[in-house]
Image 1: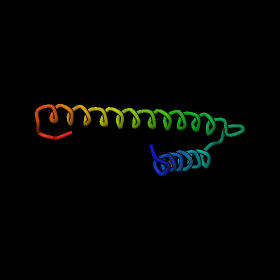
Image 2: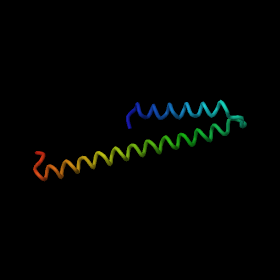
Image 3: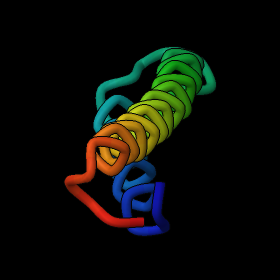
Length: 76
């Protein structure tokens, strides 16, 4: 995942946490901190998922290209 996509996910996490903090009445913003932890975990899961999808797509396209090349459609 590129730098801009990571920053976008981080900005969304930050804004969501700030929104929770404005309504949080718990001592020491405990609810906000637990929510922030949840959002950060989700952010890392999203990054891993996007990375996996990108890898799968890359390998699938390489395989398709190689199959077509073996049939003589593309020249290596």
